Length: 61
Image (tube, rainbow, N blue to C red; front, top):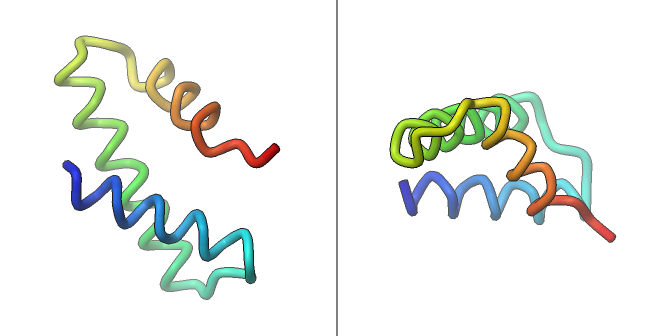
């Protein structure tokens, strides 16, 4: 789970600097999906709740 979160973080940082390629976007979507599912199961939360939390974490201000 930590490796997946690291991949998502790195791709998000990369996205700030440039447009992601198709492969990078697909990898980002896959990493986000896997992380949401893992956190949802581990925390006994709905996936939508976890997605909202991730959006809050990765919001650029």
